Every structure is written in C-alpha cells, then in structure tokens.
Length: 282
Image 1: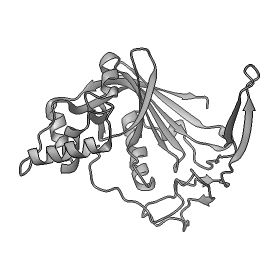
Image 2 (image 1 turned 90 degrees about the vertical axis):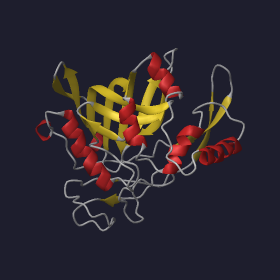
Image 3 (image 1 turned 30 degrees about the vertical axis):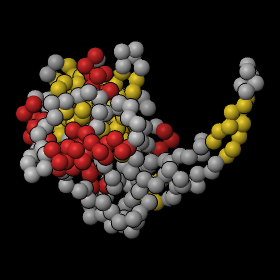
Image 4 (image 1 turned 180 degrees about the horizontal axis):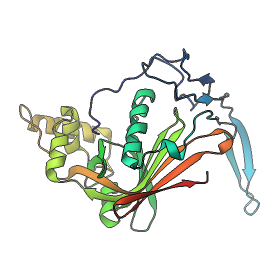
C-alpha cells in the first residue's frame, strides 16, 4: 500500500482525540450522531469514559536530600475501551495483510495522520531516541519512510540498524508495534517518491541540516529563498543526502485495548519464510 500526499478525509469538529486538556464521553456505534464520517462503524463500539483533567498541585520531598519538587497529578486521566475484541480466529496468517486491514480502518476513523509512527533508534552508547515519522508505503518487504541521511536517526541506523516502530490509534484503542532492521532504499525508489512531493517539501529537503544547531529560524528562511531561486523554473533534484529507509520486520505485534486492562495482544514472529503467531499476556 502506498500512502500519498492527498488529504486524508477528516470528520467535522468532534471529540476525537481531544484528551490533552479535558476528556468527554461518547460511544461510536451504528446509530452514533457524534461524527459525520461516512464509514461503517458497526464493529467499532469504542466507549470512552472521560472526566475533566484536574491539575492537582503538590510537593514531593526527597527523603535523602530534603529537596522539594512541584508536580502535577494526572493519575485520574484514563479511559476504558470496551466491546471490541481481538481473537485468534479474527487474525490473518500474514501480518502484512492484517496490518493493511487495521490501517485501512484507521484511515477512515482516525482524524489526523493515521500514518504517523514513533520510530526508536539507539546511539553508539545504547541511549534510545524516539521521534515521529510518517509511513509512506508498505508491502510484504516492510515499512517505508523518508528522511535526511545526515540526521541523527540516520547516523544511529548506520551504526545499529535495529529499530522499532509504533502506531497508536487511540480512537480505535489499538496499537501496532514493529521491531526489525532498517535498510536504505535504492536511489530509484527514493527518486520516484521525491517526484510526488509538493514543491515546497522538495525545496525544504535541501534546506535543513537536520538536528544540527542553528542560530535562528531566519537561517532556514534565508536558505529556503536561496534554494528557491537556485531551482527556479526547473525541477528540484533529489539531494544526495536524502532518501528512504525500509524497516524489514522481525516481529509485529497487534494490541487491542480491552476493559479492565485485560488487553488482547498477538505477536507475529518471523521464522525463515513463515510467521509464528502467539497470544501475549496484557
């Protein structure tokens, strides 16, 4: 499946995803009137039990140092996902087909960026770093994203290609975790994708020395104007330091939130040319 630049369908203003400052209660069902999305939600039945997010000021003291720390108690910020199940008989033998089913529903139901995924890598000292990147395509070979080859993540991958990905779709109460190896795409594959990017994004790929320290935003703006003039009236070429990675999975885990924290978890593990499927404890 290829994820392009066309705008994803979004619903009218509703309560999806608004859990940062406050929470509300709603139920997605065939008769629900809380959303205008034209999709079959007959199998969704996700109930969110939500209460206002209270800022509870407190001070905690370190018994060893006597130092006090001000904080915020958010322990009451929770929700319960009910009535949706994940059973072994519901799962496909091929995890990529299973992911496609879940991803297609996420594209219909999740309001923003269903292709956003947290990508974790480690540096030379085995310190983990996480960031959000966008999935651009996937097939039986793996999951593809694009980046600057001089970025921190690219440096990590060069030293240790073992990475993890995580999709989190709270509206559906679902997560997909992927662990595997990152490998560079061919120049031809990166070129094909680069040609589909908006021109501004193509120019932006030339501008930013990703993760490097800069003195101000003006540095980026000035560089952007310089590159804009350089490539005026002609196609923007692919930078030599930009391209794609494919994450070749070794494990793919599907997680479905359930009531009382008794979540359903199934793990696909690659064994030569086949996949082993096991249920995990929540």
